[in-house]
Amino acid sequence: MDLKENLQHFRKRQGLSQIELAEALAVSRQTISKWETGAALPSAENLAALGQRWTSCSTAEGQSPSLSRRSGPRPSPRRRPPPPPGGLFWVWWERCSSLTC
Image 1 (cartoon, rainbow, N blue to C red):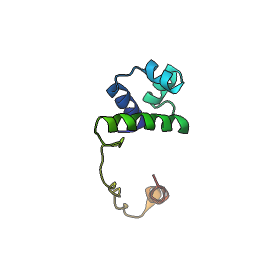
Image 2: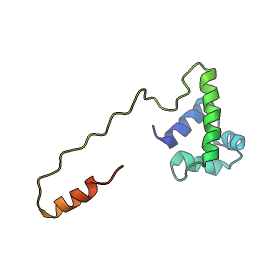
Image 3: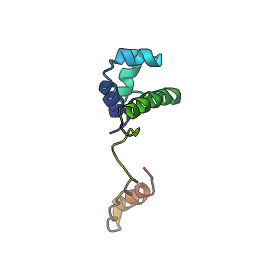
């Protein structure tokens, strides 16, 4: 789950409408909608407020305060072996393979 899916999931899990969550965070309903569609990101202050709200709810329900379903370390990403050298594709591959995600 990415951030926008987590926001919507936890809001619905608490039985809150976008308007109710917006009032609790002192933002507009449109702001909540933009967060949930990925059109905008919450500020650091709003993320902290959301985290406190959802951590307290999940621990009250006896669940882990984690927002992620994963447990343990993330697996390292697999990289495909490079294609054989030669041509314009090889130049592109060398440039792109040095970029980090």
